[in-house]
Image 1 (tube, rainbow, N blue to C red):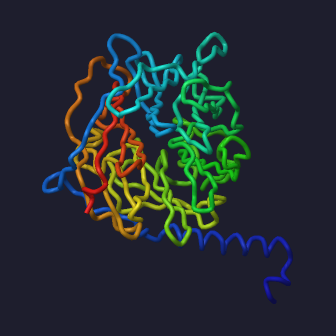
Image 2 (cartoon, helix red, strand yellow):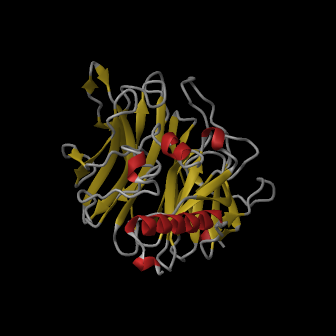
Image 3 (tube, rainbow, N blue to C red):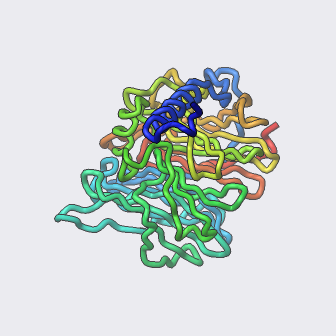
Length: 388
């Protein structure tokens, strides 16, 4: 008897078995994306310029989650700005501007938390995006115990005056702001949720996608990624960044943190422009337990900026650029920076020399913005001509 002639229940069971076997087979495959970084010894150093955007004095001592963009003849940086500790009530989002990369304005408040049950909410900077003369700044919000997660945005036509908050209707704290695929679709890299929209303005029409079944989660933030991972036998996967190869496959690399850290990034892929994602698998790409950023150079090589060192877990040093001709072997490495920043004031989870890099390419330079021990915000740049 053919499967098509079987009773519905038996056919459903057989189909489920087939899917599970296929799922297990795909999960067992070792992805080809890898790097070859081992230690800093012998790795060439880039000649860089650096500019300290903000280093606190006696207040607002926590600064993290930075992003940078060039918009209408100025650089604009955005980041999370807290009183002392990481992601505590009262954390806000600020921004600063510069016409020349060197001189930066004093931070201005982009968004302030509100009170819920007599306790201030927590805001997290979530990236920048521009379209036809309009700049969009994104930020996430949740209540004290990481509940009621929302993604918000504000728009500006000059980088100074901002709209009222716009609800994106997505329960997400993003890792990176929207990035476009070749089709023009925008995708936000979260921990395990990767919302997408075909609205070129990046304001409306966001749809949720994930490698997890939607029954396993209701929101995506810095506390929500542990439970669904445990239910599916995966390590705590978080803070993705993706790139697209010429075959239109989206490759989303994921950090592993907590007790699941083994010094490797994991990978989930989409072959339908971000509508669905494969079950994540471990790669041979080393990682220090930190955020990172992937992208593509004007010469079509793929790049990674992050901390691939595994010998000094969580030191987040040195900051490394790795290049790949094919999107698989990231085998050309450069040291961007390894100089130390001395912490001024201890705080909850403060640490890491080069935290949470975000990059842009502008007029022949790569710009990298990072937090320094989650206390100061610095930006670096170097000429792409130096990348042979």
